[in-house]
Length: 273
Image (cartoon, rainbow, N blue to C red):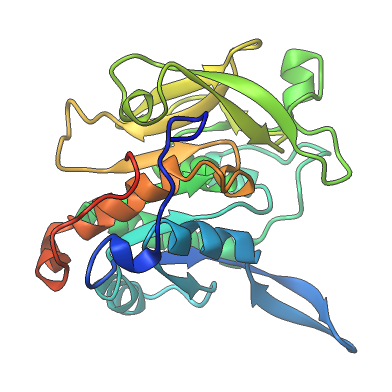
């Protein structure tokens, strides 16, 4: 057992005979590869590694035109959904004008992820949101965001820039699913200049920054909705693959997802989830 309380995962195949499939949302923006500079769908490989090391199968879900039939077909093939990091959510989606520091909107990605999330929630599909994913979840459920934390806090510690993650301490709320997974407190790798302001419908705060109180995680209350597994963190667990607890937890929840449960052998956890 290592210092963060998790046990090492022996191999993806040790978790189940037929691993659950988790869909991960992707970027859609200009990117360079070789001599080409093109608009591309992509995702840092470290997200995929988090899923596969935890015993799941990762499949990518690039933004595409939103259609209820397409969304349903996509979700039919999944046991869980991970909404990943990326650009700021468009302020228009929560009724605000953009702050000068807010990213240019990625309307195609916003629309795709809102549609996926709302349909996933209706199915009670297990959901993990990461950074932007936490904000997408909150806005999809009617919540709002602080568009620029330095204006609220007087400091920019949560996003120092130059692709340097800030290590911060977060404190979990007793009784939450997150507290049962990571304990009273944990270190977190942060890179965000925005944060949740007003909570979306049905969400509860699961963790705050230990020093300034910023909301760092939300979830659907497991006490009120024990059949739903929905958790979103403002930090980047994929940056700490020596601590797979969150990835292992969503993979385990996906294995138990009822509509597809017959596809999977009983879960044999090689890691605390």
